[in-house]
Amino acid sequence: MSTKTINIDEILQNLIAALTVSFAAISLGAAFGLLSGRGAFAGIISAGIIALITSLFGGTRVQCSGPTAPMTAVTVLLVAFSANELLIKIPGANQVHFINIVFILTGIVLALGALLRLGKFIEIIPNVVVSGFMNGIAILIWIDQIKKLFGIMGKKAYTGPVSANIIIAIISCALIFLIPKITRRIPKGSLLSATLISIVVMSAIVAIFKIPIETISLDTRIDSFDSIKQIIVTQFPTTWSMDIIIIALPFAFQLAALGYLDTLLTSLVVDKLMNEPTKRNQELAAQGLANATVAFFGGIPGAQATIRSVLIIKENATKRYAGVFVGIFVLVEMVLFQDLLNYIPQAVFAGVLFKVGWDVFDKDSIIIYINQLKKVDTGKKFTLTNVEMFFFIGGTTLITVIKDLNVAVGLFTVFFFLYNKVIFKNKPLQDMR
Image (cartoon, one colour):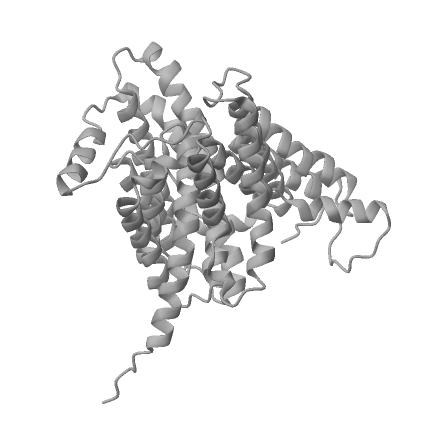
Protein backbone atom coordinates (compact mmCIF):
# COMPACT_ATOMS: atom_id res chain seq x y z
CA MET A 1 0.00 0.00 0.00
CA SER A 2 1.45 3.36 -1.03
CA THR A 3 1.14 6.52 0.98
CA LYS A 4 1.34 10.10 -0.20
CA THR A 5 4.43 12.01 0.91
CA ILE A 6 3.69 15.25 2.69
CA ASN A 7 5.43 18.05 0.82
CA ILE A 8 6.29 20.60 3.50
CA ASP A 9 7.72 23.05 0.95
CA GLU A 10 4.48 23.02 -1.04
CA ILE A 11 2.42 23.53 2.11
CA LEU A 12 4.54 26.53 3.11
CA GLN A 13 4.40 27.86 -0.45
CA ASN A 14 0.58 27.81 -0.39
CA LEU A 15 0.39 29.29 3.12
CA ILE A 16 2.74 32.14 2.17
CA ALA A 17 0.67 32.83 -0.94
CA ALA A 18 -2.48 32.87 1.20
CA LEU A 19 -0.91 35.22 3.76
CA THR A 20 0.24 37.60 1.02
CA VAL A 21 -3.18 37.73 -0.64
CA SER A 22 -4.91 38.13 2.73
CA PHE A 23 -3.24 41.55 3.12
CA ALA A 24 -4.64 42.66 -0.22
CA ALA A 25 -8.02 41.12 0.64
CA ILE A 26 -8.33 42.87 4.00
CA SER A 27 -7.29 46.22 2.48
CA LEU A 28 -9.70 45.99 -0.45
CA GLY A 29 -12.41 44.61 1.84
CA ALA A 30 -12.19 47.69 4.05
CA ALA A 31 -12.16 49.97 0.99
CA PHE A 32 -15.22 48.34 -0.57
CA GLY A 33 -16.99 48.31 2.78
CA LEU A 34 -16.52 52.06 3.11
CA LEU A 35 -17.55 52.60 -0.52
CA SER A 36 -20.72 50.56 0.00
CA GLY A 37 -21.88 52.65 2.95
CA ARG A 38 -21.92 49.68 5.35
CA GLY A 39 -18.51 50.41 6.86
CA ALA A 40 -15.01 48.95 6.91
CA PHE A 41 -15.97 46.11 9.28
CA ALA A 42 -18.63 44.90 6.84
CA GLY A 43 -16.12 44.77 3.99
CA ILE A 44 -13.37 43.05 5.97
CA ILE A 45 -15.53 40.32 7.49
CA SER A 46 -17.06 39.69 4.05
CA ALA A 47 -13.59 39.37 2.52
CA GLY A 48 -12.86 36.61 5.01
CA ILE A 49 -16.16 34.75 4.87
CA ILE A 50 -16.56 34.80 1.08
CA ALA A 51 -12.97 33.67 0.46
CA LEU A 52 -13.32 30.85 3.00
CA ILE A 53 -16.64 29.45 1.73
CA THR A 54 -16.02 29.75 -2.01
CA SER A 55 -12.53 28.25 -1.82
CA LEU A 56 -13.85 25.37 0.27
CA PHE A 57 -16.89 24.54 -1.88
CA GLY A 58 -16.35 26.33 -5.23
CA GLY A 59 -15.72 24.93 -8.67
CA THR A 60 -12.54 26.93 -9.34
CA ARG A 61 -9.84 25.01 -7.49
CA VAL A 62 -7.36 27.85 -6.89
CA GLN A 63 -9.03 31.23 -6.49
CA CYS A 64 -9.85 34.08 -4.14
CA SER A 65 -13.33 35.56 -3.90
CA GLY A 66 -14.53 38.56 -1.94
CA PRO A 67 -16.19 41.98 -2.30
CA THR A 68 -15.72 43.35 -5.82
CA ALA A 69 -16.16 46.71 -7.51
CA PRO A 70 -19.29 45.83 -9.55
CA MET A 71 -21.07 44.21 -6.58
CA THR A 72 -20.15 47.14 -4.34
CA ALA A 73 -21.43 49.67 -6.90
CA VAL A 74 -24.90 48.11 -6.73
CA THR A 75 -24.69 47.85 -2.94
CA VAL A 76 -24.15 51.62 -2.83
CA LEU A 77 -27.48 52.07 -4.64
CA LEU A 78 -29.16 49.55 -2.33
CA VAL A 79 -27.92 51.29 0.82
CA ALA A 80 -29.03 54.67 -0.53
CA PHE A 81 -32.48 53.25 -1.39
CA SER A 82 -32.90 51.77 2.09
CA ALA A 83 -32.03 55.12 3.66
CA ASN A 84 -34.15 57.36 1.41
CA GLU A 85 -37.02 55.49 -0.25
CA LEU A 86 -37.66 52.26 1.66
CA LEU A 87 -39.52 53.90 4.56
CA ILE A 88 -41.75 55.78 2.12
CA LYS A 89 -42.86 52.52 0.51
CA ILE A 90 -42.92 50.43 3.69
CA PRO A 91 -43.24 52.62 6.82
CA GLY A 92 -41.46 51.13 9.82
CA ALA A 93 -39.30 48.73 7.78
CA ASN A 94 -35.94 47.84 9.28
CA GLN A 95 -33.37 49.26 6.86
CA VAL A 96 -30.50 46.99 7.97
CA HIS A 97 -32.67 43.87 7.78
CA PHE A 98 -33.95 44.87 4.33
CA ILE A 99 -30.39 45.04 2.99
CA ASN A 100 -29.63 41.64 4.50
CA ILE A 101 -32.79 40.16 2.96
CA VAL A 102 -31.56 41.34 -0.45
CA PHE A 103 -28.25 39.55 0.10
CA ILE A 104 -29.97 36.34 1.20
CA LEU A 105 -32.19 36.45 -1.88
CA THR A 106 -29.09 37.09 -4.00
CA GLY A 107 -27.58 33.90 -2.65
CA ILE A 108 -30.77 31.97 -3.38
CA VAL A 109 -30.91 33.27 -6.97
CA LEU A 110 -27.28 32.26 -7.56
CA ALA A 111 -27.98 28.81 -6.11
CA LEU A 112 -31.01 28.46 -8.41
CA GLY A 113 -28.78 29.41 -11.34
CA ALA A 114 -26.47 26.55 -10.35
CA LEU A 115 -29.40 24.15 -9.99
CA LEU A 116 -30.68 25.11 -13.45
CA ARG A 117 -27.13 24.67 -14.81
CA LEU A 118 -26.90 28.20 -16.22
CA GLY A 119 -23.13 28.40 -15.94
CA LYS A 120 -22.61 27.57 -19.61
CA PHE A 121 -24.35 30.76 -20.75
CA ILE A 122 -21.42 32.96 -19.68
CA GLU A 123 -19.94 32.38 -23.14
CA ILE A 124 -22.87 34.19 -24.78
CA ILE A 125 -21.84 37.62 -23.46
CA PRO A 126 -19.42 39.29 -25.93
CA ASN A 127 -16.11 40.56 -24.60
CA VAL A 128 -16.71 44.02 -26.08
CA VAL A 129 -19.79 44.31 -23.87
CA VAL A 130 -17.91 43.08 -20.81
CA SER A 131 -15.21 45.68 -21.52
CA GLY A 132 -17.84 48.39 -21.66
CA PHE A 133 -19.52 47.60 -18.37
CA MET A 134 -16.17 47.14 -16.59
CA ASN A 135 -15.15 50.60 -17.82
CA GLY A 136 -18.45 51.91 -16.50
CA ILE A 137 -17.76 50.37 -13.09
CA ALA A 138 -14.33 52.00 -13.00
CA ILE A 139 -15.80 55.41 -13.83
CA LEU A 140 -18.49 55.02 -11.14
CA ILE A 141 -15.78 54.27 -8.55
CA TRP A 142 -13.73 57.32 -9.58
CA ILE A 143 -16.77 59.62 -9.54
CA ASP A 144 -17.83 58.44 -6.08
CA GLN A 145 -14.37 59.03 -4.60
CA ILE A 146 -14.12 62.50 -6.15
CA LYS A 147 -17.49 63.37 -4.63
CA LYS A 148 -16.31 62.27 -1.17
CA LEU A 149 -12.95 64.03 -1.38
CA PHE A 150 -14.42 67.36 -2.52
CA GLY A 151 -17.81 67.07 -0.79
CA ILE A 152 -19.80 67.73 -3.96
CA MET A 153 -23.00 66.47 -5.64
CA GLY A 154 -24.75 65.62 -2.39
CA LYS A 155 -21.82 63.82 -0.78
CA LYS A 156 -20.37 64.94 2.55
CA ALA A 157 -16.63 65.54 2.39
CA TYR A 158 -14.27 63.75 4.76
CA THR A 159 -13.61 65.85 7.86
CA GLY A 160 -10.44 67.91 7.94
CA PRO A 161 -8.88 70.12 5.28
CA VAL A 162 -9.99 69.12 1.80
CA SER A 163 -6.48 69.74 0.47
CA ALA A 164 -4.96 67.38 3.05
CA ASN A 165 -7.39 64.58 2.17
CA ILE A 166 -6.73 65.02 -1.55
CA ILE A 167 -2.95 64.93 -1.05
CA ILE A 168 -3.19 61.79 1.11
CA ALA A 169 -5.37 60.09 -1.54
CA ILE A 170 -2.99 61.02 -4.38
CA ILE A 171 0.14 59.86 -2.53
CA SER A 172 -1.57 56.62 -1.47
CA CYS A 173 -2.53 55.84 -5.05
CA ALA A 174 0.94 56.77 -6.34
CA LEU A 175 2.60 54.46 -3.81
CA ILE A 176 0.49 51.51 -4.94
CA PHE A 177 1.70 52.11 -8.48
CA LEU A 178 5.36 52.67 -7.52
CA ILE A 179 5.97 50.08 -4.77
CA PRO A 180 5.84 47.02 -7.10
CA LYS A 181 8.56 48.60 -9.27
CA ILE A 182 10.79 48.67 -6.19
CA THR A 183 9.85 45.35 -4.55
CA ARG A 184 10.35 43.35 -7.76
CA ARG A 185 14.08 44.09 -7.43
CA ILE A 186 14.17 42.65 -3.89
CA PRO A 187 14.44 38.88 -3.27
CA LYS A 188 10.97 37.62 -2.36
CA GLY A 189 9.71 41.17 -2.87
CA SER A 190 6.64 39.84 -4.64
CA LEU A 191 5.40 38.66 -1.24
CA LEU A 192 4.89 42.28 -0.21
CA SER A 193 1.49 43.87 -0.80
CA ALA A 194 1.75 47.35 -2.32
CA THR A 195 -1.73 48.18 -1.06
CA LEU A 196 -0.89 47.16 2.49
CA ILE A 197 2.44 49.03 2.49
CA SER A 198 0.73 52.17 1.20
CA ILE A 199 -1.94 52.00 3.91
CA VAL A 200 0.63 51.42 6.69
CA VAL A 201 2.98 54.19 5.52
CA MET A 202 0.27 56.82 5.06
CA SER A 203 -1.44 55.91 8.34
CA ALA A 204 1.88 56.27 10.16
CA ILE A 205 2.56 59.66 8.56
CA VAL A 206 -0.89 60.97 9.51
CA ALA A 207 -0.52 59.68 13.09
CA ILE A 208 3.06 60.93 13.61
CA PHE A 209 2.41 64.42 12.24
CA LYS A 210 -1.07 64.54 13.79
CA ILE A 211 -2.72 65.59 10.53
CA PRO A 212 -6.34 66.45 11.46
CA ILE A 213 -8.23 64.34 8.92
CA GLU A 214 -10.94 61.71 9.23
CA THR A 215 -9.93 58.12 10.02
CA ILE A 216 -12.04 55.00 9.66
CA SER A 217 -14.14 53.83 12.58
CA LEU A 218 -15.07 50.20 13.16
CA ASP A 219 -18.54 50.49 14.62
CA THR A 220 -18.50 46.76 15.40
CA ARG A 221 -15.89 44.82 17.37
CA ILE A 222 -15.20 41.13 17.86
CA ASP A 223 -13.82 40.47 21.35
CA SER A 224 -15.40 37.09 22.09
CA PHE A 225 -17.78 34.46 20.79
CA ASP A 226 -20.58 36.35 22.54
CA SER A 227 -19.86 39.38 20.33
CA ILE A 228 -20.15 37.18 17.23
CA LYS A 229 -23.46 35.87 18.53
CA GLN A 230 -24.65 39.43 19.14
CA ILE A 231 -23.76 40.44 15.58
CA ILE A 232 -25.83 37.58 14.16
CA VAL A 233 -28.77 38.34 16.45
CA THR A 234 -28.68 42.02 15.41
CA GLN A 235 -28.34 41.36 11.70
CA PHE A 236 -30.74 38.41 11.33
CA PRO A 237 -33.85 39.56 9.41
CA THR A 238 -36.84 38.83 11.62
CA THR A 239 -39.58 40.40 9.50
CA TRP A 240 -40.27 38.94 6.07
CA SER A 241 -43.32 40.10 4.16
CA MET A 242 -44.42 39.87 0.55
CA ASP A 243 -44.12 43.65 0.20
CA ILE A 244 -40.49 43.58 1.35
CA ILE A 245 -39.64 40.61 -0.90
CA ILE A 246 -41.20 42.28 -3.95
CA ILE A 247 -39.12 45.43 -3.39
CA ALA A 248 -35.98 43.41 -2.58
CA LEU A 249 -36.09 41.05 -5.57
CA PRO A 250 -35.01 43.54 -8.29
CA PHE A 251 -31.88 44.34 -6.26
CA ALA A 252 -31.28 40.63 -5.64
CA PHE A 253 -31.57 39.77 -9.34
CA GLN A 254 -29.24 42.64 -10.22
CA LEU A 255 -26.62 41.52 -7.69
CA ALA A 256 -27.01 37.88 -8.72
CA ALA A 257 -26.55 38.77 -12.39
CA LEU A 258 -23.42 40.77 -11.56
CA GLY A 259 -22.15 37.98 -9.29
CA TYR A 260 -22.69 35.54 -12.17
CA LEU A 261 -20.78 37.76 -14.61
CA ASP A 262 -18.01 38.74 -12.20
CA THR A 263 -17.42 35.17 -11.05
CA LEU A 264 -17.56 33.28 -14.31
CA LEU A 265 -15.63 35.86 -16.31
CA THR A 266 -12.88 35.69 -13.70
CA SER A 267 -13.02 31.90 -13.85
CA LEU A 268 -12.26 32.09 -17.59
CA VAL A 269 -9.07 33.97 -16.77
CA VAL A 270 -8.14 31.53 -14.00
CA ASP A 271 -8.85 28.53 -16.24
CA LYS A 272 -6.27 29.78 -18.73
CA LEU A 273 -3.67 30.36 -16.02
CA MET A 274 -4.25 26.99 -14.32
CA ASN A 275 -4.96 25.05 -17.52
CA GLU A 276 -7.99 23.35 -15.99
CA PRO A 277 -11.72 24.07 -16.33
CA THR A 278 -13.94 25.54 -13.64
CA LYS A 279 -16.99 23.57 -12.59
CA ARG A 280 -19.19 26.57 -13.24
CA ASN A 281 -22.42 25.47 -11.60
CA GLN A 282 -20.58 24.32 -8.49
CA GLU A 283 -18.89 27.72 -8.41
CA LEU A 284 -22.24 29.52 -8.66
CA ALA A 285 -23.65 27.42 -5.80
CA ALA A 286 -20.67 28.30 -3.59
CA GLN A 287 -21.00 32.00 -4.44
CA GLY A 288 -24.69 31.81 -3.53
CA LEU A 289 -23.91 30.24 -0.15
CA ALA A 290 -21.22 32.85 0.55
CA ASN A 291 -23.41 35.83 -0.34
CA ALA A 292 -26.27 34.56 1.79
CA THR A 293 -23.92 33.93 4.72
CA VAL A 294 -22.45 37.45 4.84
CA ALA A 295 -25.97 38.80 5.36
CA PHE A 296 -26.01 37.32 8.87
CA PHE A 297 -22.86 39.27 9.76
CA GLY A 298 -23.92 42.61 8.30
CA GLY A 299 -21.50 42.20 5.41
CA ILE A 300 -21.50 43.08 1.73
CA PRO A 301 -21.83 40.79 -1.31
CA GLY A 302 -19.00 39.59 -3.49
CA ALA A 303 -17.87 37.31 -6.27
CA GLN A 304 -14.73 35.66 -7.57
CA ALA A 305 -12.25 38.54 -7.70
CA THR A 306 -9.99 38.81 -10.74
CA ILE A 307 -7.17 40.74 -9.08
CA ARG A 308 -6.99 38.52 -5.98
CA SER A 309 -7.46 35.27 -7.92
CA VAL A 310 -4.69 36.15 -10.37
CA LEU A 311 -2.49 37.31 -7.48
CA ILE A 312 -2.80 34.06 -5.53
CA ILE A 313 -1.87 32.07 -8.65
CA LYS A 314 1.07 34.37 -9.39
CA GLU A 315 2.19 33.81 -5.78
CA ASN A 316 2.48 30.10 -6.72
CA ALA A 317 -0.58 28.76 -4.92
CA THR A 318 -1.35 25.25 -6.16
CA LYS A 319 -3.88 23.83 -3.71
CA ARG A 320 -7.50 24.56 -2.82
CA TYR A 321 -6.61 25.22 0.81
CA ALA A 322 -4.63 28.32 -0.23
CA GLY A 323 -7.89 30.19 -0.84
CA VAL A 324 -9.39 28.75 2.34
CA PHE A 325 -6.48 30.13 4.35
CA VAL A 326 -6.88 33.56 2.74
CA GLY A 327 -10.28 33.68 4.42
CA ILE A 328 -8.94 32.36 7.73
CA PHE A 329 -6.02 34.81 7.75
CA VAL A 330 -8.33 37.76 6.99
CA LEU A 331 -10.63 36.90 9.89
CA VAL A 332 -7.70 36.41 12.28
CA GLU A 333 -6.03 39.65 11.18
CA MET A 334 -9.32 41.50 11.60
CA VAL A 335 -9.53 40.44 15.26
CA LEU A 336 -5.84 40.96 16.05
CA PHE A 337 -5.47 44.36 14.36
CA GLN A 338 -8.94 45.88 14.79
CA ASP A 339 -7.63 48.64 17.09
CA LEU A 340 -4.94 49.61 14.59
CA LEU A 341 -7.50 49.87 11.79
CA ASN A 342 -8.92 52.98 13.47
CA TYR A 343 -5.71 54.87 12.60
CA ILE A 344 -6.22 54.51 8.84
CA PRO A 345 -7.32 57.78 7.17
CA GLN A 346 -10.45 57.57 5.03
CA ALA A 347 -8.60 59.33 2.20
CA VAL A 348 -6.12 56.43 1.96
CA PHE A 349 -8.92 54.15 0.82
CA ALA A 350 -9.92 56.75 -1.76
CA GLY A 351 -6.42 56.29 -3.18
CA VAL A 352 -6.77 52.50 -3.03
CA LEU A 353 -10.07 52.66 -4.91
CA PHE A 354 -8.64 54.95 -7.60
CA LYS A 355 -6.07 52.20 -8.25
CA VAL A 356 -8.82 49.55 -8.21
CA GLY A 357 -10.70 51.53 -10.84
CA TRP A 358 -7.54 51.69 -12.96
CA ASP A 359 -7.14 47.90 -12.71
CA VAL A 360 -10.79 47.31 -13.65
CA PHE A 361 -10.73 49.72 -16.62
CA ASP A 362 -10.14 47.96 -19.96
CA LYS A 363 -7.20 49.96 -21.24
CA ASP A 364 -6.08 47.33 -23.77
CA SER A 365 -9.08 47.79 -26.06
CA ILE A 366 -8.56 51.55 -26.23
CA ILE A 367 -4.83 51.13 -26.92
CA ILE A 368 -5.58 48.62 -29.70
CA TYR A 369 -8.08 51.01 -31.28
CA ILE A 370 -5.70 53.99 -31.10
CA ASN A 371 -2.91 51.91 -32.64
CA GLN A 372 -5.28 50.93 -35.44
CA LEU A 373 -5.99 54.60 -36.14
CA LYS A 374 -2.24 55.21 -36.26
CA LYS A 375 -1.86 52.10 -38.44
CA VAL A 376 0.56 50.53 -35.95
CA ASP A 377 0.95 46.76 -36.27
CA THR A 378 0.57 45.35 -32.73
CA GLY A 379 0.51 41.71 -33.77
CA LYS A 380 -2.91 41.24 -32.16
CA LYS A 381 -5.21 38.67 -33.74
CA PHE A 382 -8.29 40.89 -33.46
CA THR A 383 -9.24 44.45 -34.34
CA LEU A 384 -11.87 46.90 -33.15
CA THR A 385 -14.17 48.66 -35.59
CA ASN A 386 -15.61 52.14 -35.12
CA VAL A 387 -19.03 50.54 -34.55
CA GLU A 388 -17.66 48.35 -31.76
CA MET A 389 -16.01 51.28 -30.05
CA PHE A 390 -19.01 53.58 -30.32
CA PHE A 391 -21.98 51.28 -29.76
CA PHE A 392 -20.59 48.48 -27.66
CA ILE A 393 -17.63 49.66 -25.62
CA GLY A 394 -18.68 53.33 -25.53
CA GLY A 395 -22.40 52.62 -25.38
CA THR A 396 -22.18 49.98 -22.67
CA THR A 397 -19.92 52.22 -20.61
CA LEU A 398 -22.27 55.18 -20.93
CA ILE A 399 -25.41 53.22 -20.02
CA THR A 400 -23.60 51.62 -17.07
CA VAL A 401 -22.67 55.05 -15.71
CA ILE A 402 -25.96 56.87 -16.26
CA LYS A 403 -28.49 54.07 -15.91
CA ASP A 404 -27.87 50.51 -14.82
CA LEU A 405 -25.22 47.79 -15.04
CA ASN A 406 -27.53 44.96 -16.02
CA VAL A 407 -29.46 47.08 -18.50
CA ALA A 408 -26.16 47.93 -20.18
CA VAL A 409 -25.00 44.31 -20.42
CA GLY A 410 -28.38 42.95 -21.53
CA LEU A 411 -29.12 45.70 -24.03
CA PHE A 412 -25.77 45.69 -25.79
CA THR A 413 -25.47 41.91 -25.82
CA VAL A 414 -28.72 41.90 -27.81
CA PHE A 415 -27.38 44.68 -30.05
CA PHE A 416 -24.21 42.68 -30.64
CA PHE A 417 -26.08 39.65 -31.94
CA LEU A 418 -28.64 41.70 -33.88
CA TYR A 419 -25.84 43.53 -35.63
CA ASN A 420 -24.00 40.30 -36.41
CA LYS A 421 -26.97 38.20 -37.49
CA VAL A 422 -29.42 40.71 -38.97
CA ILE A 423 -27.90 44.03 -39.92
CA PHE A 424 -24.42 43.14 -41.10
CA LYS A 425 -24.37 39.47 -42.02
CA ASN A 426 -21.31 39.49 -44.26
CA LYS A 427 -18.81 41.10 -41.90
CA PRO A 428 -19.83 40.39 -38.32
CA LEU A 429 -18.29 42.02 -35.30
CA GLN A 430 -15.68 39.94 -33.53
CA ASP A 431 -15.96 38.51 -30.05
CA MET A 432 -12.46 39.05 -28.73
CA ARG A 433 -12.64 36.06 -26.40
